[in-house]
Each structure stands twice: as C-alpha cells, then as structure tokens.
Image (cartoon, rainbow, N blue to C red; front, side):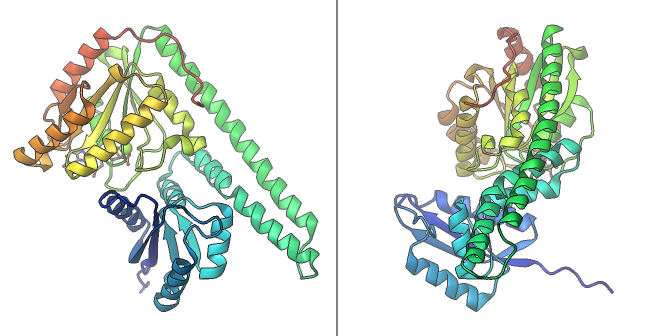
Length: 380
Ligand SMILES: Nc1nc2c(ncn2[C@@H]2O[C@H](COP(=O)(O)OP(=O)(O)OP(=O)(O)O)[C@@H](O)[C@H]2O)c(=O)[nH]1
Ligand SMILES: [Mg+2]
C-alpha cells in the first residue's frame, strides 16, 4: 500500500520593525502559515523578533539567529520560512548557518502559483518569475563557488559559472519575448473591444474572495472555483449584455505582496487598468479587521496602477456565511474605509444581490464615459 506523503514541517520567522504593531503582525503571520498549509507544510514553531532595523547579513540580530539555529537543531524542520522578503545574501548566509532550506513569503507565493498553474500563459509567467527571483541567488552561489575555486578548492571554474548564468539569461529572454507577444495580443483585443464601443469590467480582489464564482454566476460559465488560493492565474473573459460589456476575471491579490512585484504577471493588470468599471470583491466571512486591511491595501494598489476611484464598486461576497449583526459590523467598518465607493452585498453561491450588482454596474457604466485611450504601460 502506498504510504501517505507526510506533511513537511516549518519554523516561521518574522522580523517586526514596527514596535507599535500588536495586531497586524499576527494576522500577517497567520496568512503566511495558511499559505504554507496549502503547500502541505505544517508550521511547528513561530519566531518573532522585534527590531527597528534588519541586519544586512542575516535580517535578524545575531542572538536571534542563534536562537533559530538551536530550534532547528532541536525540531529538525524541513524548512525555515521568513515572512520578510530576503536578499540573496541574507538567504545564503541563513542557509549556511541554519543548515536547512530557507524561504521567504515571495517564494511561498510563487510555489503556490506553480501548483495552481494550468494554462500556458500562467506557466510561462511563473517560470519567468521564478528565474527572475532566483537569478541573484544563482549568481551569488556561482560566485561563491568560483571564489573557492580560485582560492584553490575543488570546483568547475570560471567557465561553468559564466555558462550557467548565460543559460539562465537566455531562457529569461525567450520567456520575456513570448510574454511580450501575448501582451501585444491582449492589447489588440482591448483595442478592438473599445473600438467597437464595448466596455471592460474586471473582477479584482484577494485570492479566494469569490471572483470566479461571481464571474460564473454572472455569465453562466463554469470556470474552475476552489478554496485553494490562486485558482485563477490568467484572466478569463466573457461578454455580458449582448457583447457590449466584457467581464474579466483576474488573478487574486495576496496580502503584502504588491502584484507589480511579480513583474511577469503585469500583463494580467492590463485588463484592470483598461476597465471602465472595476469590481473589488471582498470576502465578508473574513474577520472585520482582515477585510479592512485587505480592502485598504487593494485600494492602494489599484490607485497606484492608475485605476480611478470613481470606477470602483466594492462587492461584499459570501453574505450567506455571516449573520446580520456580523454583516452590519463589517459594512460599518468598511464604510469608513471606502467612503464614497458604492458597496453591494452579494452571495455568488445563493444568488443573493446579483441583480443589485448588475444594476449598479450598468448605472455606473452609464455615468462613466468609456475611456477610449488604451493604457499599455503599467510600469510606474
Ligand atoms: N459560501 C459561499 N462560498 C463562496 C461564495 N463565493 C465563493 N465561494 C467559495 O469560496 C472559494 C473561493 O472561490 P473562487 O471563486 O475560486 O475565488 P477567487 O476569488 O476566484 O479565488 P482565486 O482564483 O484563487 O483568486 C470557493 O470554495 C467557493 O466555492 C459565496 O457567495 N458563498
Ligand atoms: Mg478565481
């Protein structure tokens, strides 16, 4: 009988630089640990260091590195996962001292993307993101090896170092070219929709908010939906209102990870910035605190990529999961956060509020001139 694969085990670590933060860091760590859980990794211990400034070599202070090292010896986890995004140097040093695999939250997200990727475009984008992510690490590792070789230790020499780097660079160029072509195709499609007088409406929000479920409920389609994060990586399209409106389902946001950081995924944002209306979907079954944080972050991201505030509608989904009192608390707390942005309560599951949503959507569309100009540059 095949043995069940054992869950891998991790120690999670965060350097907390804000000494006044007593709540948020716990929420953020819980989020990281739940992402790890999706990867089949159980958190067996959590370490937090409070320090105003990270150290250049180890992120953590010396004493804390020792503490983590002792824990690794005692608990023998499969990996140590940092909430903070590590530099190549920090990772290199930490792996040598801790003698175990060291990841950060960026790596965790990419691994989930990799697990979720089904279509060609997503796979290309992930490979590029992974290579861009690991390139400085490969460079550093190769340099260290080369330096040891020069100092008289064994090794493959300078040639191997350069050829490995060149091979990675070549592959990255191929991927960039392919993605650039797909980006041009996407822009042509956006251009055609606009030329024909159509409008784009996109669904955005954190992973698992229920964007695809809403997309399916509004269009009658059956795109995959699941409780796993990042079920949708590449945009999905469908027309509404006899083809005048194109509804686009997009990749989910993740807390504390500006989607622009994953450069190769930028092309997914083209739909969002060219939309007449952006539906920001939130999961009302999250805690009031969590919804506020996510909404605040999402609004900042959308503002930064150039989505006008008056094109937004906040869609509070999954109302079937909360009682009226909890719902009222969330709506009141969000009202402060979003001020003038219209809010609609819906359940993609039961169908509650969908008519209201469609009504608000068309009302807003009628008020807004469809921007005819195409925004093709998302670098800012
Ligand atoms: N109870 C309830 N569950 C919902 C509702 N909408 C979505 N879900 C569930 O929430 C989970 C996530 O739904 P998705 O539609 O895949 O969410 P998404 O925002 O597209 O997620 P990603 O593609 O991962 O970014 C699934 O298990 C859905 O069945 C709802 O209105 N009520
Ligand atoms: Mg989805």
